Image (cartoon, rainbow, N blue to C red):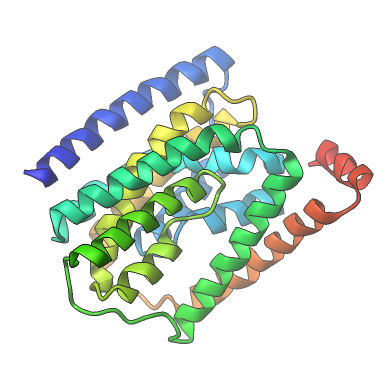
Length: 293
């Protein structure tokens, strides 16, 4: 009974978010996406569906191409990748069976964390956002490298957890939800926490995608009201991301990702260093950088 409720709620939430995005685009006269934004959404969400994550690569590309100011990055990530992630969740919650009560509880905890975190993020000073996102990207690069070096926990075969571990997973997802609003992706932490608790790595996919699918549109609706957001880029990522997800989920059975992950490590670390340099440079230089970004 829990799973059908989750799937139905996801469809309703996606519709509500789509209406909010459309209204915002019309009000701001920013409803024509760029080809670059659509391509970015397609590529990052394709690999997101394979478990690589979309936040770090998207942040790196936005930084490298200077598509938006640094303070816009968390809002663009959550608002742009929200609907593609809903599609991912609908697919993986249907295909991969896990304890429905654990699934529902972790999703609910992440949404509460996101609701608490979103109002804080939109008011954060630019240099704080730069620092937080920069550190998040370093951690993401470390997670990619650890995966390639077989240092990530392998996990067990469990699809459910005993009460003490159940509580740890729920608490973890609350924290992950709050961090998502700062631009820190949930996939990496999930792929570490759940296998450490003894769960099957495959069980991570419906849980982390389900959590993101609920919390990103929820926080995204709040972010759409912010002045620190590029609606054209959000729409481009959304339009490109949905077919990217479908192609990855339906056509790709297996592919070697090690080389790709090393490439992502290099790009993400470069963008992280740029962000951290901006965050810790003298105030006068930081303000000048904002006007040119």
